[in-house]
Image (cartoon, rainbow, N blue to C red; front, top):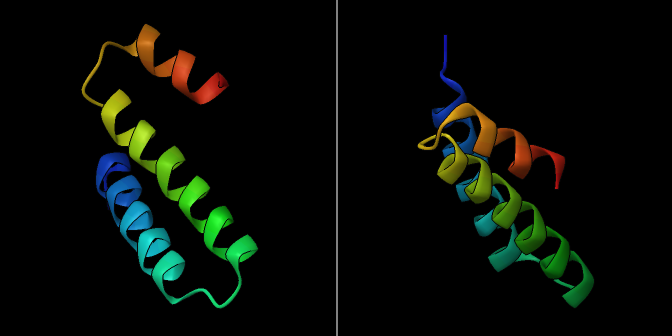
Length: 58
């Protein structure tokens, strides 16, 4: 089974790729926003659980 961190890293990379391939600025912005959220989850994975909850709630 894939770990959460691996999944979040994979999704962040996929969203970055989708942003680069986007045709419209709106789509590009949304993909970048999602990539940033997944990257925040990756960073939270290296912190204690209390800090992780704050990132998810944001």
